Length: 67
Image (cartoon, rainbow, N blue to C red; front, side, top):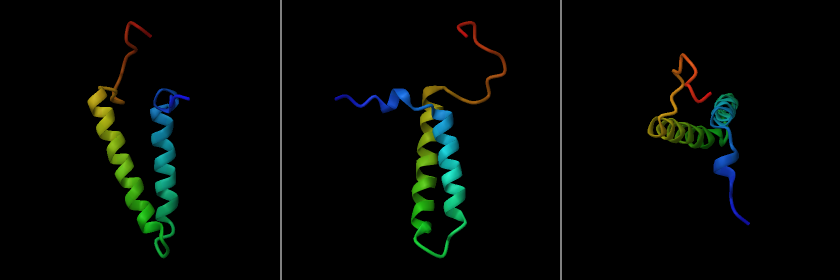
């Protein structure tokens, strides 16, 4: 069985989900959520760096000719 998760996850949806999870974890700083905040922040940073490396920035103003 191969792992195709890298090809099937929509990066924008994953980023949105992580941001929502991060916001949820931030509501409960009294418990173990501080560890979750660090993990979420780290993952968001990784995703931002991956997006920059792949050239998939969000600042596209016009569709490319391939679209």
